[in-house]
Length: 355
Image 1 (tube, rainbow, N blue to C red):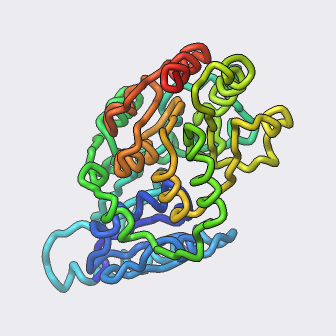
Image 2: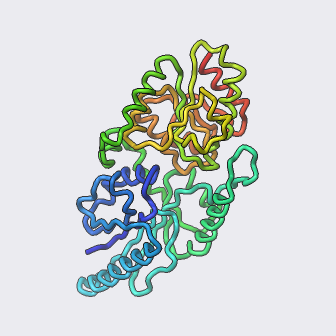
Image 3: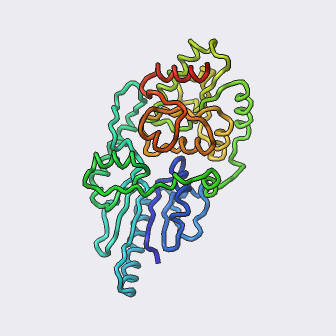
């Protein structure tokens, strides 16, 4: 009998897949139904005990989810009548958006995992340090509206860190906030990989070989992150351009910044900077191996609810240079921190590393 539904239909890549790999053993239990994006099928190892349904992205996707909710809630109601006992039908929304409605025919509990700190923290859309595009702003505003409209349909809000709990409580003091998502605290590198499909054919062996050669004569700073405004790429690029033009001859060793962004979307001035390498989107297998080949993780992000690369770097004993912000200290012990709004401070810290 299905007693819990985990709605993961928007999780199909990146940090979402890594997050599901951490939760794998917790949600892979008999009596659970996992609704997941079909695109995640090739990256996440199968759930063996839980019932799993992969849903393709389409205009009918939400209707399919609604049908599953109605079907299993009715079955659960019949189950309760036969058992003559009080239990809860639980729904977990791991996508961050609460349900548009909740069932009145049964006693149910609704849990919503909030992963997007940007929806509750202040961001200045016109800050010169940020790449804010109109599409991002529109998405951000719509997401906020949906949360405010339908949060009343949830019972408990789940977060991943105490920092995030504090932020949500300040924004929504009347909600019950639970830090139940501490799976990352006890994770090991082996455990992390256990629940991600290991497919060596996905490895970019040519790129890994190239990085290995580059690492012999360069200090490599690695920043694996999507090209979103809060990731703060702009000030990082400006810092490395400044270092390339004014300081490169003063260092005893050459240096490179590697980012997981497509070179084609970058301005020509950045494409021509030989000290900035654009790797493009890479597979999990490739990223995990890159951690073992580079010298530092550099992480200038302004807002994170968790910060998976910080956890991954620590798992690989990679020194971390990161923003001097609260989320960093909860998940790792950085080697060096900097003011993420100050190009001067970032440059000074990198100069200290290279000198």
